Amino acid sequence: MSTISADGSSYQVFATITPLGSGYLSVRATPCVEGLRDAALLLYRAVRPEERKLREQGISARDASASGAQLLTGLLADAGFANYEEFIWQALPAEVRQRRALGARLPDRVGATGVMPDVLAAARVIDTELDGWLERTVHLQAAAAGIVEALPQVKQSLAGVEEAIDDVLAATGSTAGTMPIMLTVSVWASMLADVGGSLRAVVDELDALRTDSARTAFRLALARVHNDTVGQFAAEIIDEGGATAESAMAIRHLSDALREGVAETELLVAATSDHATALEERIGEVRDLLFMLTQLIDGWEAMVLERSDEVATRLLPEVVRHNQRTVEDVAVLDGLVRSCATIALPLNTAQVGAQIARINDLVGPSEGAAAG
Image (cartoon, rainbow, N blue to C red; front, side, top):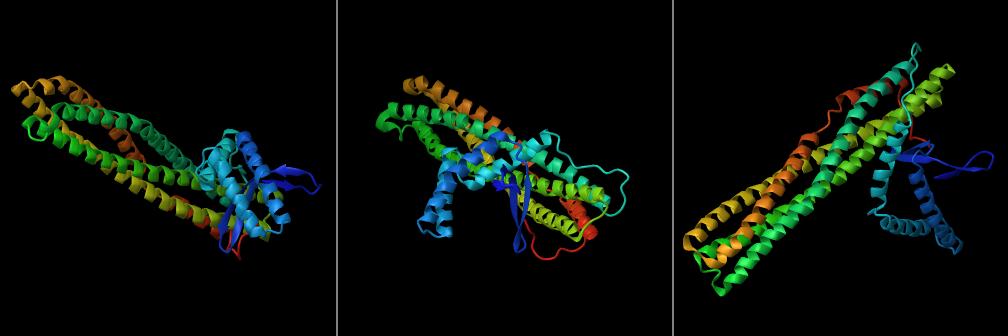
């Protein structure tokens, strides 16, 4: 966002605004991702004049804002984002990663005395835990991306099987449903619908998992912002020789926001874990169906050879080839899904919760809602 300094000049900040109690907590920092900053400013320059024009026409601030939000949604859609939420789910983690890449770390005040060194120590423990959670989320998102990349090949292989079966049925004409050999093929064709249904369920669970993992990455990035700011406040208080009521209250508001964020993250990770388990079950259904269908193909192949059916003998190799390819592709997909399920385990937040409680005990109770 753009803001005005005391001397009237404008400057940009990356602001995170979090609901807290009956108010909001705002944390501002210098933007680190230039491309993201430039893109945000372009959006701002496109939307803000539209809102001002509507206000000048007598439109209420609420309606002008709604119109601006609609315009923003359209601009984000043009940039490949489904909605504003999807944009911020990517923007904040990218910004926080870049801050770390540029060397941003919690300050160190070795030898300091009083309460604030203990606050800083607690923030360091939380920081270490967040590192592990963030790393796991990155691995989960990479595994999910691998599944997304593998799915088109599975669908293509399955389509090849369907086409080969259709060729067999078309070549046999009206007798397809009555000949023993072709009866097996008809059963195979009907079972393909079940495979397709299970594969669609895989896609649905995968979409839900990716959404929740993106939200988790956002929440963890926000937790890092709040925890880093706790550490910065604590270091400043140490450097200035003591805490004011205002600075202590700021730390308390930040730790309260951190506590609420960790609780929500825990729920998101639990939901992601459930999606990963369901995803594993759905791909298991696909795998089991393909096993049964392969057995049918094996029986059909033996029947074709025994009866010396010319049409079936000619078309059989294509059916077998496409089926084998599908089985192999699903095996790859199965491995990726199992990897997701291994990563997507519920969080143990006990250590972080204990450190947040410690910070709150050190700085005292909060009073009222947070301020910007």
